[in-house]
Image (cartoon, rainbow, N blue to C red; front, side, top):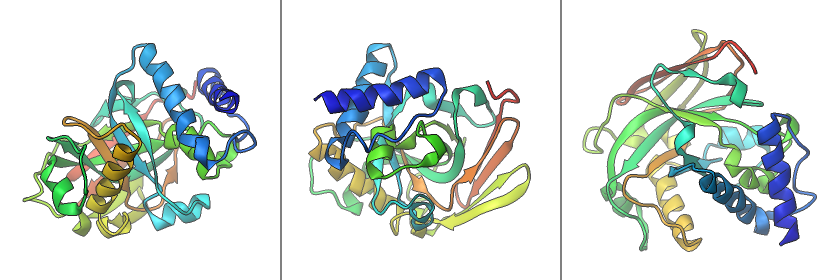
Length: 259
């Protein structure tokens, strides 16, 4: 569809040129948003990027209020989005970054056949980790609707995984508490229950949605399950830390150069 290509190119140009663009909701509706996302992900894969998992967005009521969006969505994680605990993140790759503390899951089994309930998805989890997600919007001023953020790969940017890997026999995701600090100042707090009631509920939603769209979750995938609390804007030079009970601490610093 020409509308899908037009919206995809607008977002791809913004990402490439590091200049935020106008929203794409003037071109597409919600029904076309995932097609735009898939178009640009396919282009990145054709250039050599590798799909390594998914991120669930808009799971926290606090984040939904921040953005004025009323339902969850998901995006695709690529290998060049991944960073290690303590890394310096390239601020120059980002336009309008914000950070979130999250529970990440790594899968040990495919989730390609439903029904998907919390017991089934929990059995597919190899382990959980603390994570920092750096969300970013190619849309100027974060002026987004559901269609805009879905088309923009669910406002994905970068992510950082902690070093502790805990099986679900060692940690209960819905009971964790998270604290996100920037430059040593506590800026956001939340719990696993703030993520759709349970991060495993979010994972079940993703498994069902991905399977329905014909691209199910696979063993080895990383899944960022969604923010535990409100997202926090960051800038070049900031030091960020998330501590999640039972999963430890994950840290990153944004490079001092904005471009």
